[in-house]
View 1 (spheres, helix red, strand yellow):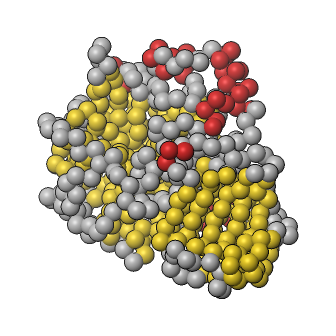
View 2: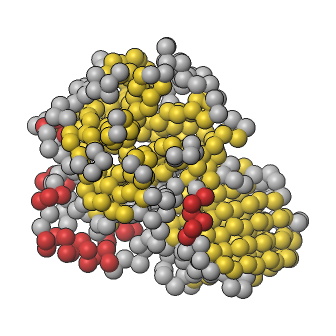
Length: 489
C-alpha cells in the first residue's frame, strides 16, 4: 500500500475489522515469527518503554504502529510478566488524545511512586508546515491497570538553545528528589542529554546539560538512561550520526554507554571513560534498564534499527525485543548476560564434543531453529575455528575465532533473505585468546551471542528458510576442540 501521511497518522481505534483480519492473515503466514521473543501481534514494534517491576509483575511497554511495518502514529503497547519468560499481552496502553501528542506517543520510562506506576513519555505534534513540537508528558496507572493521563505536559518545550529533537524521558530518585534525563539536540546540531529535577514528579526544573567530555559526538542522543552499579555511574544512550571507526559504529545508528564516577547532581558533571558500544552485532538499539526486586539491573533493547527495511515488512509486522539481560560492571566495562530466569525455557538437552583437524563436521544430534546453546572453543593451531548455524541449501550463519587476525566474527552473508546490505554482512571484534565461551540464543529469525559472560555481545536478525536448521563445526588449517550443549526451546 501507499503510506500517505493520512495512512501513517491514524489511531488504532480507527482500525476496521477488515483491516485487522488482513493483517492477521499476513502475520500468520510468516515463517519468521519468533518463538520466545516479545513481538507485535501486527504492525511495527520499536523502542522498549516503561520497563519496571510494579504490583508483583514486570511491566514492559513498547512503541507500536498497529497498521503495518512503517513508522507512523506511535502508540504504547503493554505486556507484562511475573518471571521474564512468559509475557502476557495487555493491549494498547497509550494513544494520542490531546493536541500536544497529536502525532504520536513517543518513548519514555516508568517509575513507581505512592503505589502507582508513573509513565513518562514524549508527546509529538506537528503544525501545518509539518514542523515538529515535542513535550514531556505523564500518565499514571493504578493497581487495577487503569491509566489516566495529565491533560497538559509536565515540560512544555525544550530550553532555549536546543531544537525540537527533545525526547525520551527517563526518571529515577536519589537523595530524596526525582531526576529526569531527556535526549536532546543543540541548535548547532550536536547531541546531548538534559537533566531535570522535581520534588513531586509533576513540576520539573531544568538543571542544565549533563557535562561529559564529548562536545561533538553525533547529532542527536536518543533514549538516555542513567543508573549506578557498585558505585559506578552509567550513562546509556543511543547517539545518531557517529562515523565508522575500525570495527566499531558499523550500523546506521549505535547504542552505548559511558562508565564513570556517579553523576554530580549539583553541577551535572559526569566523569567517565571511553564510549563503549553495547552490541557488536547488526540489530540493537534504544535499550532501557530497570531494577529487579532482588536488585539486579536488567536491560531490554529493540532488536532492530530505524530507517532500514526488513524482510517481514511485507508481512504486516516488523521487529522484536531482545531477551532480558542482566548488566554488571567488570573492569570498568558494562557486561551483559541472559537473565537466569530464561533457564526455565530449556527442554530437550543434547551434547557434542569434537576434536577437529582441518575439517567440517556435523555434531550429531544438534540442530534446530529455536534453541539455547553454550559452546566452548579451544583453538589448537587452526587458523580459524567455529560453527555454522541455521545451515540449509545455500544458507548458513557463521560464528568463529579468527586466530590469524585475532578477531571473533559473526558472518550473516548467507544467512537467508538479504537486507541492509549497504551496512555490510560481517561484524567482528578484537579477540586474542585461544579459547572462547559462546552463550547463544537462536530464535526463528534472530541470534543473540554472549561471549565470555557478556564481555562482547552480538545481536542480529536472520531470515533463513524454515528448513535451514543444520549445525556444523569447523577448523581450518589446523586443529581445534569444540564442546557444545544445546537445549531446545
